[in-house]
Image 1 (tube, one colour):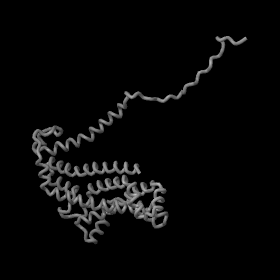
Image 2 (spheres, helix red, strand yellow):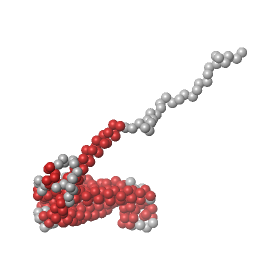
Image 3 (spheres, helix red, strand yellow):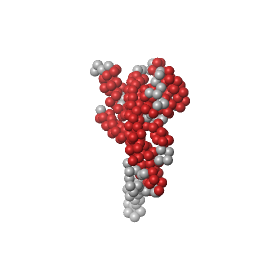
Image 4 (spheres, one colour):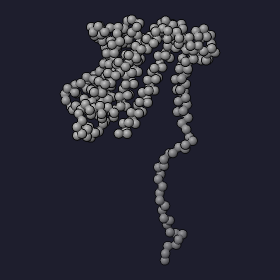
Length: 297
């Protein structure tokens, strides 16, 4: 006789996976992270807000009202005062020093990085690469006295070229390191195909390596530009006359000249910071376009 239906063992259903993914609903949010984000935003934006509104206040209005209250009668007198104090001259000096140091530093660093990566494993190139890496371990403050003596011997003291040359030297080590890593990631097959097409090393460097490493080149240019633009020690040590001052050094002079006029000091801070913001926005667009062009190839 067959087994009764009631006593037959039931077929075991397929076992479900015991480990289920802990999927959070879309409506559940990270309230703690959001709260810390808003707190950090307040910490950052409150000083900026205070600087902006204070720069449009008069000196008497600044001391008579709440520091965080917008001015009832905004004025541009502080900006006019700063601009009339040779601010445009300092701005032009900073532009000359920054461009005069960033452009040669990036070009030399790119060619050196290409030679280190594509030049094989020669002893000379390894020594040059080690020399560049050693430059990262030496801060500017430790070499300011030798740099000062060299600039004196070259008769470049109190000149813009005397600030440009040390800025180039200190911008090269990090630039070579960053660009070398990007050039190393380029597939060797691309270089071999260029060589088979009859391209020289010079043509391969500028027609292949440079377009593919454009994001790194732009990033290095932005970083060095911001560092040199905000540089204070070299202009302080290597210049003497007010005509050779850059904006950071001129800002210190504004603080001394307007030690009690806080709105004028903050107006000079804003005018000094605006070119940095413009440089960042322009460089960011170039960085995104370079990334798109590199992946498109």
